[in-house]
Length: 284
Image (tube, rainbow, N blue to C red; front, side, top):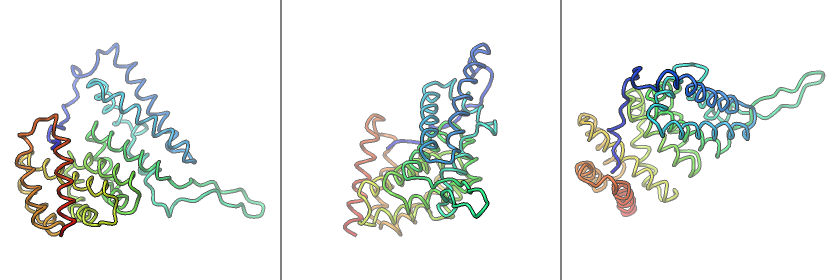
């Protein structure tokens, strides 16, 4: 099973950054790419917001290829005008009831121009951007907490379509990796129970049910490998209540033996274990 325990940020020091002569132009390139993308993400129309999200995701993929570039991205998120997460929550994840089209003007008045609602594609892409930001920069996960990220994403998980649900589960993992505050929210909002409910709901898309099982394997495996054994009894109890004893025992066994797996085979093992969990839940 994939481990999340290795996701630790090293402190940024002058020696960890590119040489001063390279640093300014490279930082300027990152900042300019983010600035342009964020401007479009905050636009009134969905096609512009999609364009901005794709641009930011491309930037994240580029900076992830280099440790030095990743550190420059982390530096950029200290600047409010370049922060990605607030723009996502203020534009792409806002509640549908707050979204309206352009209204008809009253007699003698001007039309009121309001933002069109976020489309399914927009929400799914915004979740990928959120995932990337949190994986690259711990501060992004902490910023997301201030926007009730866990509550927002659990709502997306339970109410949106297949593509959004899958992206949501990956984003949840990224939010929980290194943010104790998000972990507490997830616990208080009974996130494990909600994921379990999706697994046992045979009306749901099978790929989503498998993805939820993978999610439970990942978060329990992460807690196990980090030595956070004090958290596991409660998580296992929630899983047992939702999925039954057999599924719980399978997850516990997977956690114990995950470290002995060949890293190249962990994803295949994760998927196989998740399929087993879904199959067991079908028989209960």
